[in-house]
Amino acid sequence: MQKFIDFMEKHFLPIATKIGNQRHLVAIRDAFAVTMPLMILGAFAVLINNLPIPGWTDFMNSVFSEKVGGAFIWTKLGGNIWNGTFAVLGLMISFLVAYNLAKSYKIDPVAAGIVSLASFFVIGGATGMDSSGLFIALIVGIISTEIFRRLVGNPHLVVKMPDGVPPAVASSFAALFPAMITLTIFGFVTTIFNAMHIESVVVSFYKAFQEPFQGLASSYPTALLLAFITPFLWFFGLHGANMIEPFMQTINAPAITANLAAFKAGKEIPYVVNKPFFDSFVNMGGTGVTLGLLIAIFLVGRKSKSYMTVGKLSFAPGLFNINEPLTFGLPIVLNPILFIPYILTPIVCMTIAYVATVTGFMPACIAMPPWVTPPIIGAVIATASWQGGVIAALNLVVSVLIYSPFVYMAGVMESKKEQAELAA
Image 1: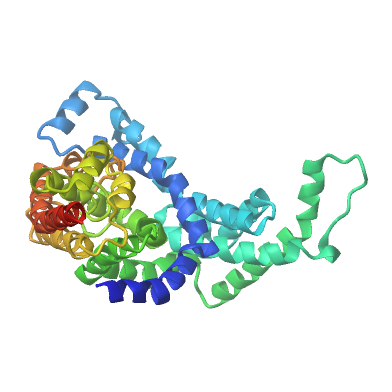
Image 2: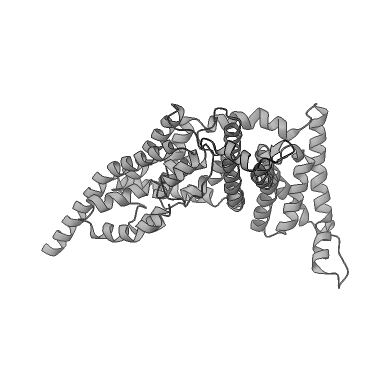
């Protein structure tokens, strides 16, 4: 095991660190971090409008019987919130990716964000302002900023203003020609697509690539990879969740949107794998299902004073899926005893939840409870069902069973070490 750890530290860790710090991935991750509260709110708004409680809809329709535009007035609250969240997600991401990327290049982030937003509309963003235009929004945000930053540094394209002009005005004129050229490039590309009888680049891209990709991303092999790679990276001290966040969010928003639409229409929910699926059934207590590790420590880890001390300090944060005190205090990072259960437990829990979903025992996730929602409660909210709570509880029991032998072994090893030190 030590040879394996040494090999990974020497060859894998430097590469993974570079990937984790890659500016484009960081810009995407930070953009989605800003929109996360809005996506949670939008999901809850639709869920409240369609609570799976017998008689809920009939009761609300009878109390608030007035209709506006063919819909009952009480449903307008959720609909209006949706319009300000998921319905404009593509626009927000287009701006925020460019904003964060421009900050990393130390150029005007607001100007870059506005240029990206305008470029998104130039290429047909009006037909994909919601999550259906998400991939195009990401691409436009990156490409427009890369073009803009190269142009904005060209002294021949700077409109010099006389002294005394307010800084905000001077800054806008400095970005005038770079912005015009960037938008013209996107306009030219869009015109070429139009000449090929593609009326909407966004819609065509969604049908050709994003829909098939979502289906692939919702497959068991993809879920297996995601369940493995996050704890694997964390074991070597890399923030695995942050490193795969751009990928998770790229599949997450469209999947949640499609699941909510299917749920609202009373149809079969199409996508199993999304962020609430992992938050509710795989990351209970944090990456590695570490709430199960904490419980195992209290059950069989009493021989290890260090494990018990860290476990007591980490239990309260762990209930809210915050496991950094445990990850670095125990530690889990580079701990050869915990390597196997830390990698294996998420894979097993993911498999149980995946099978429970595809067999129809529990519905797929349709809502995004905040990631700090305590385990089991989060699963009930995410699936809008008691079955979700049952599977989460089952996964928690399984995680305790997997961790317990290794925690016990750690206690025995620590006890023997202490005895040897006393004897010496």
